[in-house]
Image (tube, rainbow, N blue to C red; front, side, top):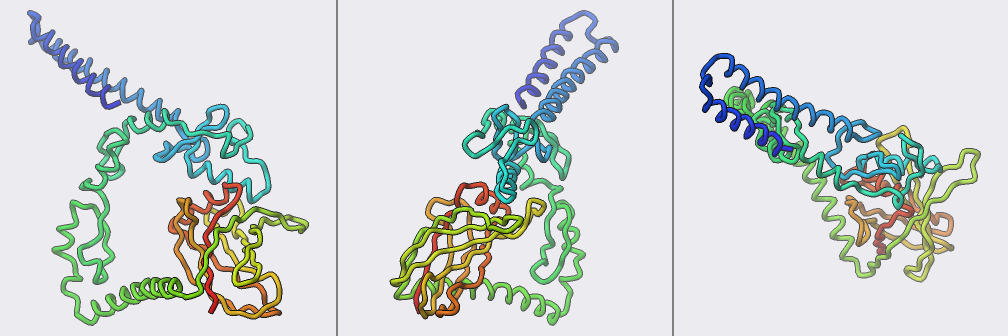
Length: 342
């Protein structure tokens, strides 16, 4: 679409040269006409961009998607986030997912990506939210990284300054920032707070590396299938098939917290020992070999006895929490489970 703007400029340039060769080229009337022709042509192109932009919106969030775009059987568009959200809502409510526009049935297999719309949207003109500069959408990402109006933090953020402002005013703020003259005790207090967060991350990393060094460490890929309880209002839960480790049979059971009205949902899993035995086990869930959803690994421990054959539920923490909708949209959820007998 940027080619259209260039075309309009070239067209105006050609019109200017053609009028320059005419006898009355210097009259005020002709100069006004040249400006009007150029402005009308560019206004028409901008109006065309706006009309196309209004047509190519997600039927759910009514925005122009910046991500992958899917369409139902009849061509109604949905961004990937809303598409997975509809499928996840249908899974939780035990209903068939339907297009919100035409109510046709939807599934992962019946909906396809619309690459033409994705490419067309990337060429449409859009305004930078920080400086209002107009450019094609495919240039916005690189522009916003260098835009002088983009929000930045203070240079002294690591010592406690919480100022956030436009990039072009950051140097002026840094020169006037009070934190460059703060007493050492205030700065040390803030650094200690940051160190505690860093220590928590180091502790989690050491816990995982120590767990992976166990002599009796095994892993298995599990497939969790959706099921419904027998309650008056059936509840969704997940369960894997049995697998054998340490001479015993096990299974994994999962639950989803948060209904279709909640944007922040959680998935929790527990490891169940089938049979009566006593042993102490550490376990950790990670993504399977082919998953694109990143998981923050957490090591859990449970002492199994004849009376206590189920561990506590462990929340699966995702790097991107909204990726849970991607998992719920699938027919089954796949994880890799590591287990070590102590």
